[in-house]
Image (tube, rainbow, N blue to C red; front, top):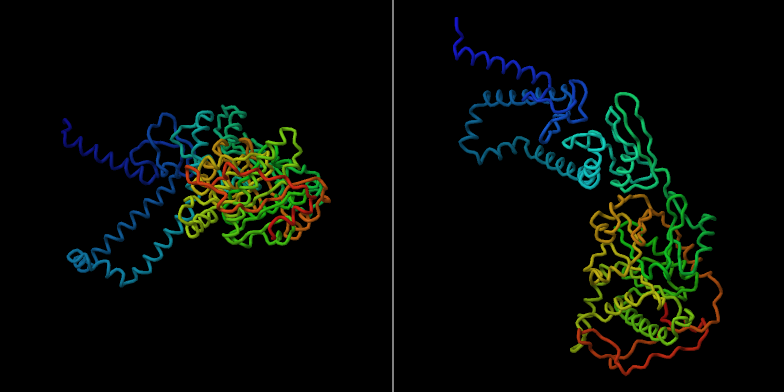
Length: 545
């Protein structure tokens, strides 16, 4: 007897239902398309060849996991339907008066449930924020680079074979990359890509090709020391041997000394770090070494308590009030102009000591200080005065003078934006940049030439020192307050060479207004004469600490 069209439809429907039940109970994709190498008992790690389009995370789960999820959902739906059937009157009341439904739910304990759900959602968001950044900045780009060399489909979820911890830049962290069983790839290529995309240095690769699950482990081997304390005899010896113009910043990988030559590499230094990043430790390290070698320092500390170790040292002028900071910057601006004139008169072969003692200008918390300087000038300036604070102009002028005048700005910021510093061209005057506990945005802003950016670490005292387009992971030297003061005040004996002192601030009638509104010296002003005084006379001419 011929089969009717209706019979064929019934058989096809029954067959589809049976296949659907089998896929449901087997934990397979309901459309019948196998997308990953997952089995009923083992989760998947790879997308199968010739699979097109995106692959959902559920396709990687083991069959029993998907079955458990489906059974839970089915049980919840069944229980909800049965509850509505048992409470038809309540459901009907809610349907007829929907505005009262939320209130009734809250009255029966919904407030507690809603509070728990909100708190859980907030905690989940806080916990996964770093993970999302890790996936976006590191794991995703690494997957795109490794997919072709390893022969992995691009649709593969990178979390299935790239096990990169959030703290992968820390000393004791390790990275695991699961490899394809075929092993048809170049180890050198894979290792080079991992090193470049994760911005790693001083790492070793431990290959484990045997078995059903081959993998490679990446660990740090050459790393900076965990601590670099000045009390260590070896560290103290390194500091003592450092040239006068090149203070030691810290110890890098393989025990390499990281320093900056202020006369050859960079006259100014920028320190950018968030709270707890060790800004004061870094400044104390550099400043006490320069004082030990005969430099003089202006510490402009709007926070007032950043460097108590330096108060009272004869070679240090400590300014905490914004008015004092304003006046000190103007004095330093005039000193810079004087030194330029002296250097011009003495010529190329001039003795650096004849130009003047090395001056360090330590400007703490520039974000807040620059705002306060602008507000102070708004309150105090009179009619006809320039709109821009002359103190800010003087600071920018010193930054542009170069290394010949032996004046060095050590600037500290939590966020060294162009706006905070007075423009992107000002930021470019800092060829040496020390970054600690930085964000990816801060790195792109301050060191875009170093790519990819090394991941920030929370290891105490650890920073990245960027000089000449190269970043060096560094453990910054740690001086206690007592050690810094002792080292700063026990330098070489003062020389008898002739040096100059900072002249007093010029009177307002000695200034004229430039076309752009800034204050400059009048053309008729004669350059200050170079005093012939011994070293001890310099400190008496400087403002009292």
